[in-house]
Image 1 (cartoon, rainbow, N blue to C red):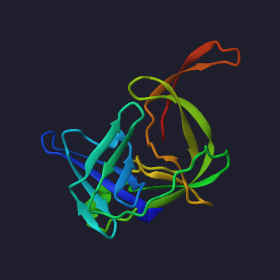
Image 2: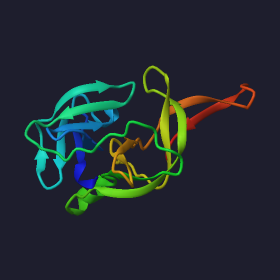
Image 3: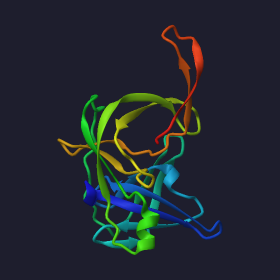
Length: 193
């Protein structure tokens, strides 16, 4: 799974900012899946593919801001695609969160970039809201350590190697909490610590 992950860096010269995230190959012909929030619309995108180099010719195929999904294409790169699961993982499933956390520290130290693989456990499915339209959608909840920079990386089943979902480090979705009778008791903000 680590060899399928790529580092995405959005360089916005106008705002003098960098945005880091992770993506992963979903086809051998260079299609990459990531979170939409990882991409900055006016920025130059750099894609680091381990053992192959840094590429600047990634084309955005589709972006769904509401679902927080984006597909990129690197035409000159052959990637190792990860198979996608067709079903939700059961509670207790052991998985791996793959990504490029703490990239800024790595770049400042001048070390070679390697993706990390963190063991996590599927805790269940939490209902949250989509980013722009507020639709109720399921999120896989995990127990384990997931760092910033891992957003967009694959959540991989430890046994069969299938992608169960995509890592979203911060889930900025607010929902209404209700008691067992359906009466509203307040708002809940889902987020990672």
